[in-house]
Length: 466
Ligand code: NDP
Image (cartoon, rainbow, N blue to C red; front, side, top):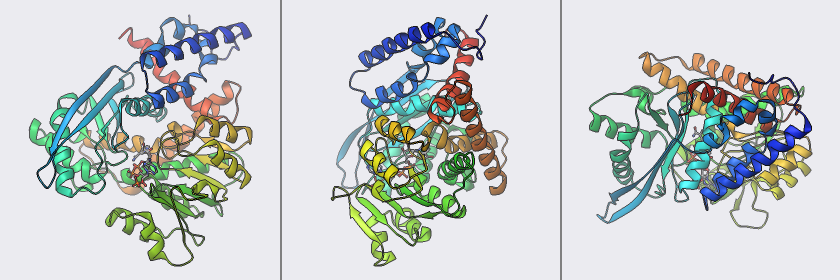
């Protein structure tokens, strides 16, 4: 008989579970050597789970935590390709199929030189709980390659994508594993990957990839969804404190897919967005980011952020990466949205943000805030929305794309955006009520981890030892 989740466990039960979790984490580190980002992601979830295991011993008995930390399947493969000069390159491809407890594996592909197994596993692990939080039937997975798309021609990108898919195709499928984009993988790459999948399999299986073009199976709002969702989640956190984004000064990092549409939605809700960045530096635009110009520079020309500063005018400050005071987080603001990459917001940055008066921080990127920085925000009473919850709008809209593909239907922008807003409200609500149920009101990290974990754990229990 499962324990009543509303009954508080004894302090002894808590201590025993804490010890068990520490041992389990030590085991994860031992068995996945050198995968530091994966260790960090696992630690961040495990350190919040002791109260759940203390209340629900049947989850410990079934070794749910051990099982969820071990991917169901990990694939690594060679990706050979030729550049425009005819020179041969060899990259490594990855797909980690982490959990199918709730549905087909679902998660993006990242093309970036920093990609290795540990990065893909951290992203895949996060994805399990994020996908659960959406309330839609999707499992967790992630993939990518250490290929660097920067400076490559369209033809080179196409040849790389075709080679990558020539191996990946045998592992994916609309009912098995459904990849999407991430850093370095946008609409162009999804197009080349889909074309090759179709050619090899002789199937127009729209639901095998999401993030497709609107004319060939893509969903409206998918491009905007992660950034929009992150801002909608922020608005919910502020609303819970009787505030709103209207009139707020917002600092955003990154200038890719997530950042651009976070800026767009924040502006629509009445905020002034002061910054954006890329790996070469950041810009501060006190008049508010000119979104049309930013899209022209980053999406059309595929240029660098310094070009935005040059074209926008003398009032804009460009600060090169590595320069003194080169953190975008040194700019005082009410709301901070890290939308670039993992571990980009450190303890020092968090202290600067708190000093500058920040009220809310929401992670558009995956794990952009270091654990030390998260603690600074929580101790200062800043509303902190972890990526699992705050950036789940992208994958949720991918699931809506799969739904439209399955029914050969295409929804309007307004209908899809309404669904996205409803999903983000639902995620906020379930994080907030779960945190409260476990005696940690306002702690969205605890709420997101436990709410996501319980959904996955219950499905695993029901499905037996697989
Ligand atoms: P993009 O490739 O579109 O943009 C990434 C942005 O982050 C670029 O501005 C890039 O600058 C910057 N960046 C990347 N790596 C670094 C680095 N090491 N240092 C400094 N800046 C860096 O990716 P997305 O916008 O899609 O993804 C951004 C984040 O959001 C990632 O963490 C991703 O996992 C997460 N995410 C994305 C989702 C999506 O739907 N796209 C869904 C959920 C989460 P530069 O061009 O100079 O490299």
